[in-house]
Amino acid sequence: MPGLVEAVRERGDARMKSVEDHLSGILERIAPLAPLELQLLDAHGSLLVDEVAATGDLPPFDNSSMDGYAVRLADVADAGEQYPVVLEVVDDIAAGDTPKVALGSGTCARIMTGAPVPEGTEAIVPVEWTDAGLPTVRITKAPSSGQFIRRRGDDVSAGQTVLDAGTTIGSAQVGLLAAIGRERIRVRPRPRVVILSTGSELIQPGRPIGPGQIRDSNSYMLTAAAREAGAIAYRVGNVPDDPKVLIDTIEDQLIRADLVVTTGGVSAGAYDVVKEVLSELGTVEFGKVAMQPGMPQGFGVIGPDETPIFTLPGNPVSAFVSFEVFVRPALLRMQGAEVTERPTVRATCSTALTSPDGKRQFLRARYTPPADGVGEGTVDPVGGIGSHLLGSLARANALISLPAEVTAVAEGAEVSVMLLG
Image (cartoon, rainbow, N blue to C red):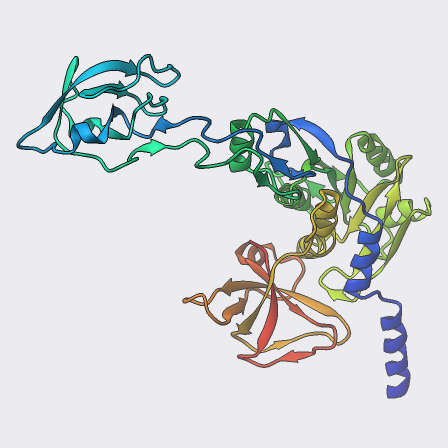
């Protein structure tokens, strides 16, 4: 009898894909979205398609970094608190003005921050080193050569590459692009993702809960996760266990979807309508992946445009882990990212662990980096292994990843950790 049991287990394992095979199969069918030229603010959060070079210098002219007075060094060399130097103020230059005269011996110009410096300027005297006078000014401290002058091209010179292809356009990049005069930019657009939960037992937050009902947390959680991955995510909410309602809802959403994610209804139960409905289309494959949590998985395409669709398990932790392991890399691939996986580190595990034979285990955990930044950090599992335990998931900032062939980990052993933050 033990031999028969072992043979059954081996055949069961053979029917399961490895995590790596399932992910590689997904990524082979996901292509980056076609580039679009967008206005700067619309491009925010997207990845650049081409490198960007500056067409001019930044700053475009020598200008003052302080409110004060533009001076020649020889005129203020002897300035001090006891014996101030007195100069004639021959110009008053605000930001956006053009200097009217060049500085001559014994003269200076009052100047504001960002204003172009007049010809002959060798330094700026901050207003705090003066009596702020007009039409003459008393100067009590001498600046050094070039002090408080921002030189043309100090930041960026004409022709210099300022952003590489593949750069994510964040707020600083938007500012730089605006400063060098780029109004529009070619990017990979952010994918549009439709998220929906299935299950007649689901109700929305804020409504009273009845017998046998649970609140729909998955659609909220995965919508947030998709946005964190750079997508534009639309939460549809829960769909009852009705085949017609399900397929009608998905078809209605395809017009605004580059990718669809469902949760629930993918196991072998009598009311698992996602598997029932989509299997009939012949374009979505359902199966088991050798992982815990998240074993039942489905992936394929749907609709006239062959929109990719992920069907994830309904238990919240299973849905979250499945998103991290499979959906997030696909979203990054669609955005043109070269690196699609989360960062991983090696860390010392604080407790002994066990793991099912033949399945890659993902355990919620808290990772603490090394205090001095050198060597390994530590990782502590949080909560139990139940795939419904959202409380521990919310405390986790990492997932311990145990290979399928590992069944036990000793306290103090080194493990692989996927960082979520």
